[in-house]
Length: 30
Picture 1 (tube, rainbow, N blue to C red):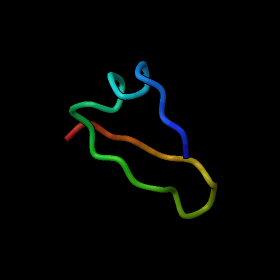
Picture 2: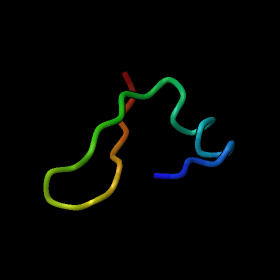
Picture 3: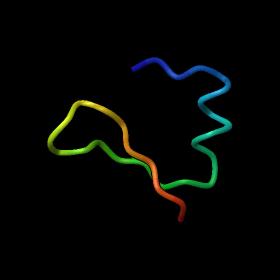
């Protein structure tokens, strides 16, 4: 999976993990 610099900013401060039902990365605030 490729992550762009903009995505890194969005993901920062969040706990991320793959959803079981769909092939996408799901992030929630810690």
